[in-house]
Image (cartoon, rainbow over all chains, first blue to last red; front, side, top):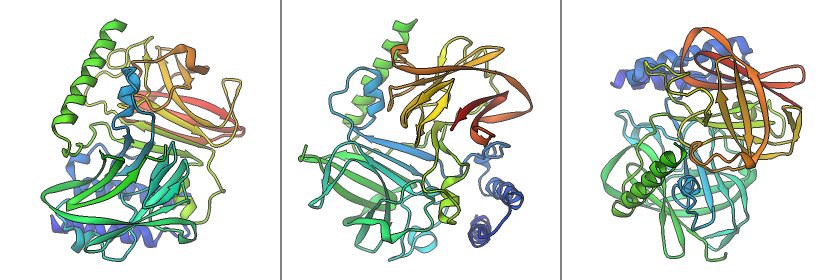
Length: 217
Length: 190
């Protein structure tokens, strides 16, 4: 297991470092190599190989507030207007320890995998006394032991590895709780609160909460 | 048939609403058909962090990727002549960042839903205004913006997971849709 992880890690480092100036031909062969590595790491992903577009190891997912809004829409039971949508990818631990093998304190993390994590507000909301206008933004984090900084940034449609801090709009503080259950895949949900909803982020045995206030509406 | 589908989906909704109520803290499982995203220009987010991209992309597509998993896809899993979500789970979303032409019509920038009606010789690709919706259960023809028919081609290899990718053309791009042993190209002009 550890060997696989190391191979994957080594390969991703190689991939990141070598992204600089490749021709499309070279990139194609890299993509194929990545797919092969994926196969070695996890046999469950043996369908990853694909001529058109490989299936991601960290699958993308989407959450809405109201929770499962798209199902309310289908059932003609929309009781609350559409407020927020998040699109993120879900890396998994695969035997690794979060703050040993994956993340580091005080180093920015894309709150997901692959593309930068996107948050779209359909109405104005308030987070820690800052008014956020409707629109698309990206989210990233700076984790620490007791507190994670959650950054709202305007550099949308981007890959998550390089943050453009000149486009940071707001930085919020979110508290960390150590919980007694283990979450294998990084997970985001909205948890309804009195004045809006908490964005809950869970991975390994950490749970991070960022309260979002809708009372302005 | 429509009524049955609707009542099943309503039941499903009530059921999931009840589950949500009793287990608020339960975290969602991974989707069987993972979601994915394609841009035109292809690979736009990676190009962007390498400073090799234009200010904004032209198109973004978000779709769920079902797998063949040994099944007969077209004619069985995806029935001929019935509106299909062109993916899995949530209906497939397409966003235009500028005006584009689809099926000879000018489409203003914005978010739309893509559906398809699959037949043996051709597919009808439908652009519809009802976004943020699950599947094609509530498909409403009145919300159609444009439709376009495209021919079907056979591929030599099997594509296990539904795949959608944009390819550059002289007048814009083609959205290539491939699954099982079939492929269609949907042209966008800009």
